[in-house]
Image 1 (spheres, rainbow, N blue to C red):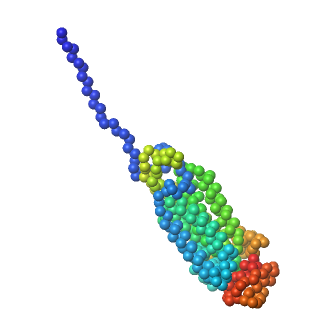
Image 2 (image 1 turned 90 degrees about the horizontal axis):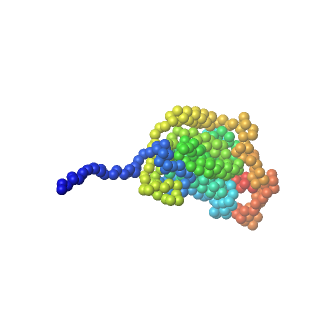
Image 3 (image 1 turned 135 degrees about the vertical axis):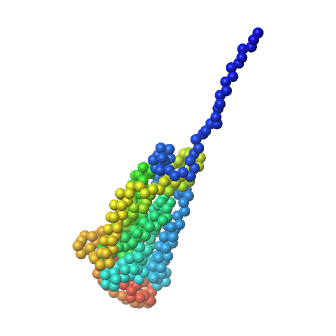
Length: 371
């Protein structure tokens, strides 16, 4: 009996190729959208970020030094006996605040660079600097220290220049111009990368709340609200000019997190000079505005002459303070190592436990009592 030959079939099975994840890839926003790796919120927890924020730390230290110098000039610990700690600081002129007489008559334009470093008081210092740290840290980690540093400095200078166009004959600080520049740049960055971010309404609400709180502080004497307006416009335009896609660092697997990856990815969005028309238009507008404000400030132009109601944008008189530009007069009486100051306008008085006080400090205390 013959055996039936067995059919032998050889099937060549090649190695199964599994898709490899792209490590350290540069992906565009469209590619990330297809791979469902975004959107993600702008103000996400700092624990999900790995970038260093050294630039905002430097600005924080510089503001801290400037505020300490202002407190020392006011003799807040010894001569003033902490009288200036919880109120508006006096002697802001001595540390470089903006004032109409010094810029128009004396041409002390160096105050344009010192005023953005000054604060009107401890409450203003805490609120303003806390806002700068909150917004600045997220901006630096999102777009890098170089671009954020350029926006910060340009906004600070632009805000100081705009403030000079609406100066009154009283000290004025312009430190919030840089903060509002960061807020404006955050808004332009959000618009620029609208498809990348989630929770956009929450981001807009955060920007609105920070702007409102610091804008209300700008209604107090010595704080320029026009610097806020100038800084915001500057930062908004500068954001359209120099901001690219955000820098996304290490993303990790997390079931309850914003991303759900099987492995760790190192992803950086591709940075390219997209939308050149919008960037060019923003650059032209920014250049024209900055040049025009600079020339007007150097020429000593005061727009309050042409806008009678603009003064109420900068300072609103309330029962807690006065926005008057006229010199305050106070009666002084010394008895038993005590100095009593009485405002001639409203009758307010204050008894100070010291008598060794300079004439400049006396005028500052008189302004505080009368306001």
